[in-house]
Length: 142
Length: 142
Image (cartoon, each protein chain N blue to C red):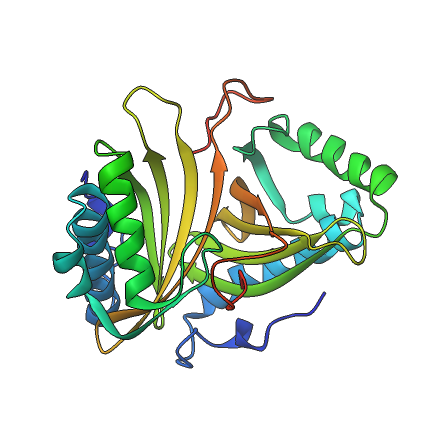
């Protein structure tokens, strides 16, 4: 994963609260383990006593996440999640991500929201939208 | 707009830096003016010297945003943007929003990311996904 340099400071350059910084690092490690390495066991160590899933295509809980990792490992072995920006406030980490299932494809714009408790991920929301081939502006989706 | 109660504190209940709090209030006012009231003039007063647009369906700049507000006012006069969660870090405000174009529809899950400078909005990214009628879990998208 391309760990964004801003993960060590807030997006304005101000050093973050250590808890916020640790939560960001946990989420970045979760992308690396769960999505890029597709290593469910490693990713599951970053999940707390529950994993409340809001992505409508994934079943609830740890077993649902295991099924998702198994699916992408078998179906899209080269899938990459490239974190473009990461933010933290309170118990939440928000990441703006470029997901590419197959190298060379335009991929998907994603925002994931994670809730953490005691340094572990316990809840996940996301929104996903395909990156279009053309757009009304030249700024890109990221 | 249903202003979320957490707009006055961080998502963990800790009082926010006054700048972060002010940026959140600016963004909440922008939803109210631009999307719920569909009042371009009011919304434009919250935009800075530039408005860099990353939504691929909207033209760049203030004129592009004006065209968007005109479009929704004419086409979806009852459109509502209901902010479910709002976060802030550094120069950025991130909002998790339930957009409903026509009352009664399932609507759209949206995350908007705004960059602010000197208290005004200068850049916007978003990701949008239709809320499905059924899902693999019972947790909803919000």
